[in-house]
Length: 374
Image: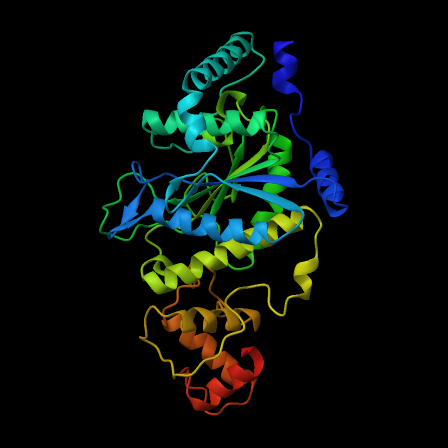
């Protein structure tokens, strides 16, 4: 009986899609728990005074609003800018003993199965150990999700790696999506859910180049957020949206614009999983366009949302990144560097703007606004 609980799917793709079909007909909603990673007490990583916990909550609130406006979904946000929300705030206190008992039972089951050779240990990417209060809150979220029939749990994070000096830009970049290791009962549905998210993100962003993360979708046995010790029934994904020191996160205005965009791409990826194609009716499947440019732009201009929208427009023209380079070399940054200048030259050549200088002057601004303006 113990083995059957571990190896039987706790959630299925067919079941999730049926739930969505029922929701279209007004019979219930798909329950999605959104967990902005870390909190004010344990804020995760940081870079030049910017804390991961502050970034995750902005993205989480944006995703919550998008899902809340969709009648098929019931989003449940665990934490906002004011702190943990109800019912989680009370649940962590009132259920403290039962959470610990729940985890102890699950751990014993897994130990027994491993001793019997029915479950094997899987080593993955090395993660920092979470402080004990965070550990119990994460397990508490799993227990709450099980008891309240959550369908999907999404954890929002930004990446870093051990040994990086906090004031320095690191050597890795890109997003990754962690899913439960294949022996867990929510593994198959979780990977199926993560796949369209990965495909959607890949249109715009590079996958992480950290070894073991470079497959984009990474299975993990240790992350509590995904259901360590088989503690979570729902499909789950922990999304590392990028490394906290990446250029797009350095300036406050560009960062907030980019976080809204990441929330939208997550929402579109969720809809892709459920076969919802309403996004094809958007003029542009991005929050960065349309945009009205009013000022000239040139190489050396840094950190402005107008440059982020310029890069998005060039991407839709299939000019960014320029030919011969990839998204790691030329990511969306909000800063006007050599990659953007080269892509602007390509745009000018494409539309007969002579000479192709790589500077966004009056004529180029006019063409951009004609094509991508409001």
